[in-house]
Image 1 (spheres, helix red, strand yellow):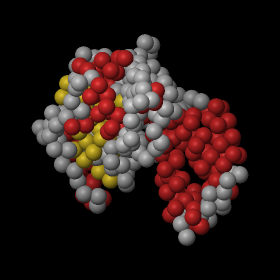
Image 2 (cartoon, rainbow, N blue to C red):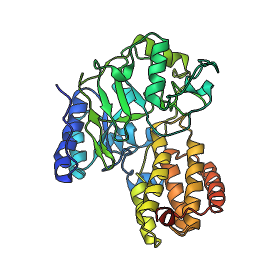
Image 3 (tube, rainbow, N blue to C red):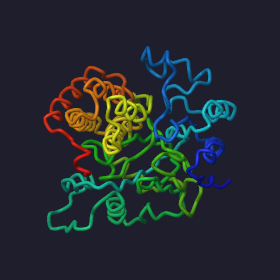
Image 4 (spheres, rainbow, N blue to C red):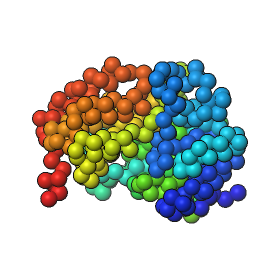
Length: 367
């Protein structure tokens, strides 16, 4: 079976195509779960789950065919999948990597300052005499790691499924038939990481399915293989070297609501609504909720603090109220880390207070 073709951005085209993507993934043996329409995060839990937070293992919802708790509810049951997408044909598709036996190398291409040399390829010293001019993103660090191991660059591996992301990144899909049970990581983590701007999606996380359409664009399969190849031995060895084998049972957190839609509503309700402020708010809250896909090593506290600082600037500039800001940040934090409300609240208060001293006048900055 070939990979599903990318569909257009018109909603009437997306609705039938979205279910086809989910069914195709399930037919490969990959458990799937819904993503909120246009988003890369799961839809909200049912109201009882929202009102009484609890562990996904204690929740009866997935056992009776509800999608609560994100990837924990993932299934290959075509009847359940059909029922989910009948409720909302605009759902996107997430694939639970661990149960699917998948390891996905997630290459980022975000503008950012190059980190200290010991964080470019964790555990591999890069001497000061080495010229790093031109090194800008995850494509470069992954190619560098492959070259050091005398291996082909995975981003050029036409023998496995590769998916271009809307932001210009790349998902490189592999099968882990040795059942290493590798864990997730982000390339910016000060702890476990494969390479700078190279994330890993494995046990305890999920990946957006090929051909899924979001507001940012389509996750587009590239020419070449339409299914994942076996994880190369050298990459498996690198994942082991960089600490991706878990020594104890994980405690994954459940992705919950997609907050940014509510964020835009709050801006409008607070008398703002300028597109610049909406975009800033959407971006920083999405950075926080995206941590739901990686239970550990996502730099969550730093991202929440940066989001609170930025939102504090928006509040001080009059783009939304302090109460709305605090609520939106708390919701985003709870979606990613539902078991640490007290710690999240402290980070939010501190970030908002600091950010409020630097008003962020989006409208004036854009003329």
